[in-house]
Length: 214
Length: 188
Image 1 (cartoon, each protein chain N blue to C red):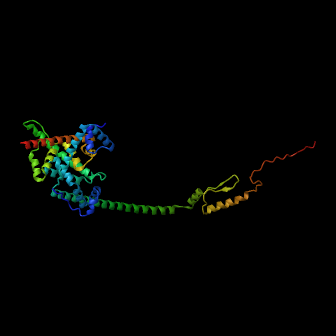
Image 2 (cartoon, rainbow over the protein chains, first blue to last red; image 1 turned 180 degrees about the vertical axis):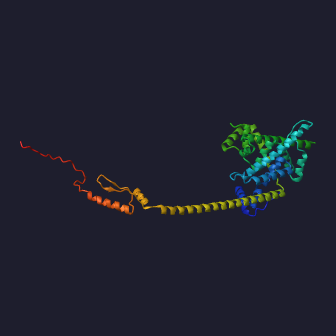
């Protein structure tokens, strides 16, 4: 999907830093400054939420909820010394995790009625249709869909670290702060995520080879 | 020696400083399994580069922007009104304080002028210039002279006091005691 860029009115806005744009928006309610901020970061914030949730409708809701909080809290909570996008990401991350935990709680309660009696992760229990829906709406390649699927299978903590690192190239120090763990724990989660992904890729390859032989 | 498990990921994620990197590369050269593990993880990590960038629907972005600008404008207008009201209040208080201070100043100034008496002036002068008489019975003054009648009287008194002075033979003012022997005799 092509990135929809909004009019910023003046080319010089592109040369301004985030902090300057935020200041302009806060002091003058400058619409172009806000548009420029959105142009820069909307895709990354949305991709992070989408990849964590793997459902477009829910991702839309969380994205909107995130920015509603951003707008409401910008004057009170955001300190202009810090990176604006890191602050926005914290809100997006918290909103996403809140949603996942609510869903988990719901599924955990229902899992008592599971015939097999085994409790499982939210993403383990996701029906294939959600992925298929996502594929229908977003024209993505088979590889991308498979990759998203593998990412979705990762435990929440590992998925968070992988996506924050991928979409934001966030240093592990910041990831650790955002997720309230030590740097070593964050690095460890990244390592286990890569090991798990490698396992999923290998299984996929084995399956493909099996199909090819048949 | 670095912990290999931790080292692998720190090396791949470029979280090592140059010295640590060199040490870890040496370690990989000596340990083939470690090298294979790092390369395997690197290949897996590279696949993440294919993760797609998703964009939110335009309608949502429009709605967010509209709401953001609306809320921020009302906030900015609100703060402007608050500043204006506050400025007016401050200006009113300042004007009131100025009027009261000016009134008090003029009232106090007239009061001082009307109350001041010659006696007070004398006392003030006396405080400024205190005369005293030294060992040579000369009147001395300290401080500046005050131009009024009383000062003139004192000044006259001081000048008259010079009449009491006597010439001194010695420049130092020191006269040794007379040691002349006076011979006396009896009529024996």
